[in-house]
Image 1 (cartoon, rainbow, N blue to C red):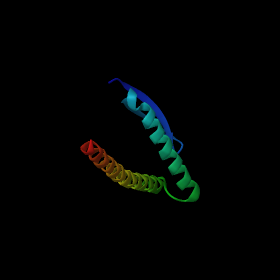
Image 2 (image 1 turned 90 degrees about the vertical axis):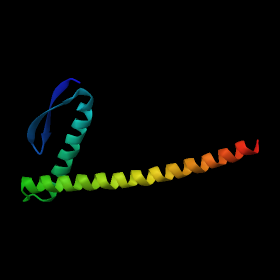
Image 3 (image 1 turned 180 degrees about the horizontal axis):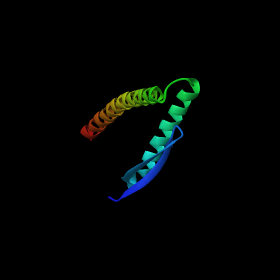
Length: 97
């Protein structure tokens, strides 16, 4: 894979990264999400240090990730259960033929 350089602005500071071309879009989206989260925290807590803003943003995003993973796991269980029920019905129909 070829590496490409990208530049992102997070909390009014410019950062440069190298990434694979196929990861460019998702990295830019992640940087935008991080910047938005940090800007919201800064706007709500104007005296908070940049380090604390960064930590709070990381905790908030990690919390979002864990909630999303838990929800996805729940959906996976539901889908597997539905597929099993459908498979059982299909086997019954085929057994009766």
